[in-house]
Every structure is written in structure tokens, then in C-alpha cells.
Amino acid sequence: MDNKQIGTAEVVAGMALVLLGHKAKGLSLFAHGLYGLEQEYRKARPHLEPGLKARWQEAVTFYEKTHQNETNRSLHRWGIPVILSGAAGLLTAKPYKMPWIASAAAFSIGWGMNILGHGKYEKKAPAFTEDPLSFIAGPVWDIQQFMQAKQSQASQHTVRHG
Image (cartoon, helix red, strand yellow):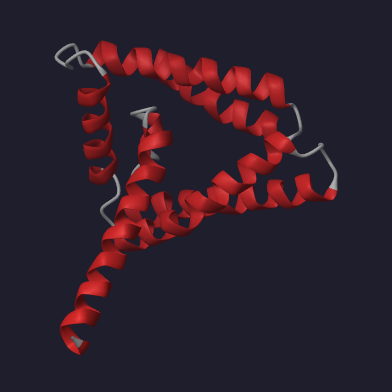
């Protein structure tokens, strides 16, 4: 296994440990894998300007390129908020109690939607396997898409009824 595969495996295993109720170990392994993926990302891109602004722009651009299929985008618009709410519950609720079980279900369903979107419709690996900043860029990008759609709907409504 190369370092990228190891980092990806650690990220996935970390999420699985959190899903099994091992919060500290899971978060630690997730963070270690994410750090390794970021190191590999930067090593593969020596041209990348230092600083967060250039890195952020590259992450958003990459995320958009890896999410071109409309069905995949739709599955992500629904799946990512479900993942985030599930993750919040997994990290705050007592393991194996009802709120934690509901959070585990939400987390799993959200990831299932994203994996379906990539596997069946986009035909590309999830963005985080190539760019670890996608864990943040993805939800931000989805919120931006949602806000743009709302603005577009509001503009169309104003034109028709204004």
C-alpha cells in the first residue's frame, strides 16, 4: 500500500471506529489519516502556493470537477447534511443509547447516499481520497449550490410576479 491508500484506509477506519462507539480512537485515526492524505496532496503539488486561500480555491475547484453528475450532486445535497448531523450525534451522544443509534443510522444512510452517487452515477472515487480538504470543501460547496439555487428561484419568481 502506498501512503495515499494508507491515509484513505485510516480515514475510513477512523469513521468506522466512531460508528462503533470508539470516539477518541476513531477521531485520532481519522485525523492521522487526514494529515497523511494532506501531506501526500502537498507533496504531489509542489507548485501549490503557501497559505490557506490558494489551498482552499484548489479544493473547491477539485470538488466541483469530481461532482459533475446531477444525480450525484443531488444525493450529496441530501446526504452530506445527514452525515454531518449523524456525526454530531455520534460524537455527543452516549454510545448505544437511542440518540446515538439514530445518529449512527443517519451517518450510515448519508454515506450510503454519497457512495451510491459516486459508484453508480459519477463513476469517480469520493473526493477526499484525492483531496482531504474535501471533507470541508464539500459541505461548503453544497451550501453555496443551495444558496445559488434559492437566489435563482427568487429571481425567477420576481420576474414572473414582479
